[in-house]
Length: 177
Image 1 (cartoon, rainbow, N blue to C red):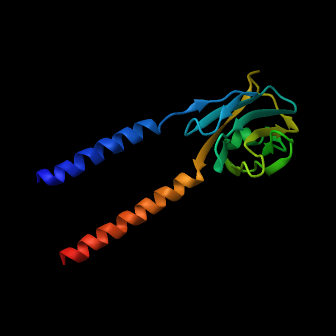
Image 2: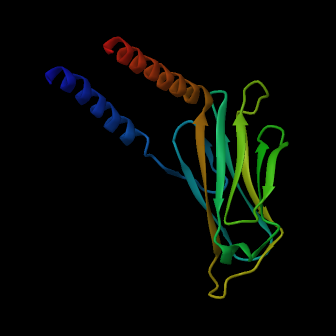
Image 3: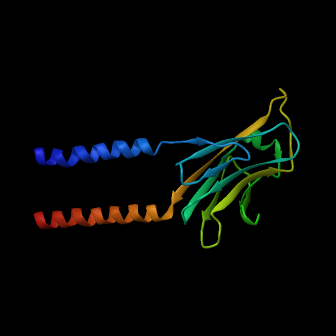
């Protein structure tokens, strides 16, 4: 029993510590620049008082490759107030379009990869629209978005660790039988 507790207690402690460290959220503002590897989740809010416009946030990465996902969460009521609303990733150095999609549904996802091989360690996330209808209460119309980085080597390491754990458990079961 004590032998099992010696194994379980450190594992539980490690899980609690890792869970606490992975819960950070950074709020971004238009025109700001953020290190994509410095946090686990970035959130922002796009506001429009009517008319055409755009919203841009710069993300940089000191490491390569880093896979990132941008999600735009838009309520159906807000979606109808924007004309030709799109989200795009641009290379910050060359202003080259890397990936773009129109926002047609409540949640739209757009992926990118930060690669040093192609000098894509700085990218701009840009929301743009041709027109927007002002709200009736004279306040801004808004929608939120989030960006979540996933380091590719870390994901592979986690997968290999899990597979190694399965092999170890099977070997122990086979030896016990």
